[in-house]
Length: 54
Image (cartoon, rainbow, N blue to C red; front, side, top):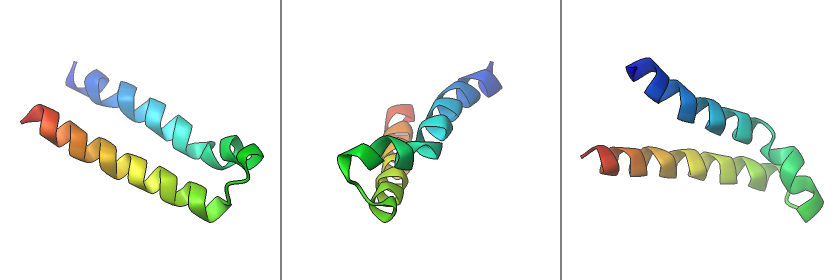
């Protein structure tokens, strides 16, 4: 159950971050900016996860 609780959200995030550049290309977002968006979304997810667990 613990592994499942970790794997489901991680899989969704990993799938989304992996194609973020292709998703944001039509909006004229550069690959570097897409990388930073992905980075900060993962960091924000970690912060929110720790805050909610507390």
